[in-house]
Amino acid sequence: MGNLARKYQISLSSLMNLCDTNYMLMLKVLANKECVGEQRCFFISDFLSYTVTVKEVTRYTSLVSISQDVNVFITKNNINQDNTNNIDRLSPTLAKLFRPSMVLRLYHDARMAEVISSQDIRQVKPRYDYPNSDMHQPDEKHQINLFLNEWLQLCLRLGQVKLTLL
Image (cartoon, rainbow, N blue to C red):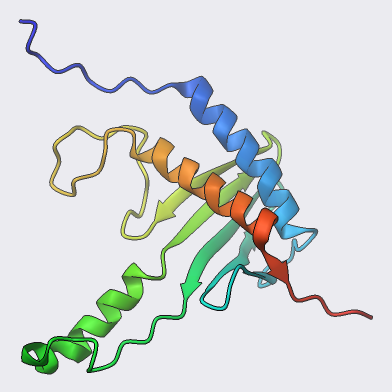
């Protein structure tokens, strides 16, 4: 009986604190860009940048996407010569791996930001049974929101934004 694995217990207070922090960081990142289609680009280095785009704005919520743009040059010389026939098939897959993205919803009344989709996960569940067919971690939702927090902090600490002066 002692060998039974315990199910992951969601720490609601920890997740809510993280979503609160992400909301405050996201407001700083957006810097009053609150209209649909507006973007901010944060340049971290010559090879790394982040793009934040406002997708939807309603009275109490906003939908925002954030994506990492990495300049990776994939050429035929980078791929094993035996796989040259597969290069067209491999390039989009590799490009997707180097360009992670998330969609998050900002709840203005609750002052929280929550990741609602990331990469291939359309709707992030609060808990996953483990093991599962997609190999999601039991605390996948918490980890993805923590990853968003790290992205936002990186943008605010090291990011340079191109501003247009009037």
